[in-house]
Length: 146
Image (cartoon, rainbow, N blue to C red; front, top):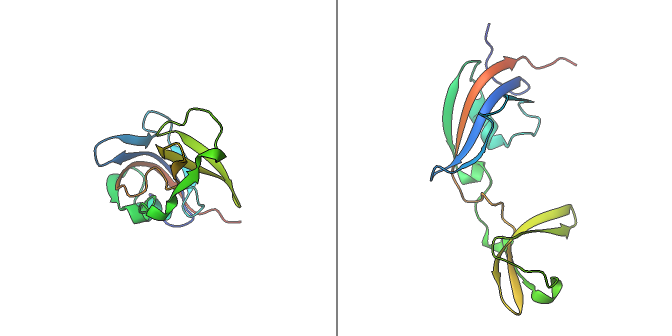
């Protein structure tokens, strides 16, 4: 008997995340399926919600809006930092750097470089993007009883 996906169920699936232009961001269709428990934080809630109700054997595609995926692009997350704060290494546009903040490390992408400052974008690289989420469900197990 096949049970539907709900919070607490253990799901085994293949997935792909694709941008609107067709660029594949992540996929495990060429690998063994992944397993996780719905609600355990391994998947963003915006990606878990459309899975609810699916059963083993189901295949589907969902268009996930930016606010349910990796967030909207926030201009306040783009910051100019004095050039003196960087070593003399080459700072190329597109370079991903890691910055220390109160919670640990925060990645940022260099978007502009001048003699005086370096502009860094701290938004998630997929912020503002609609994501096509394709899934193939292999197995759904009931929530484990502890």
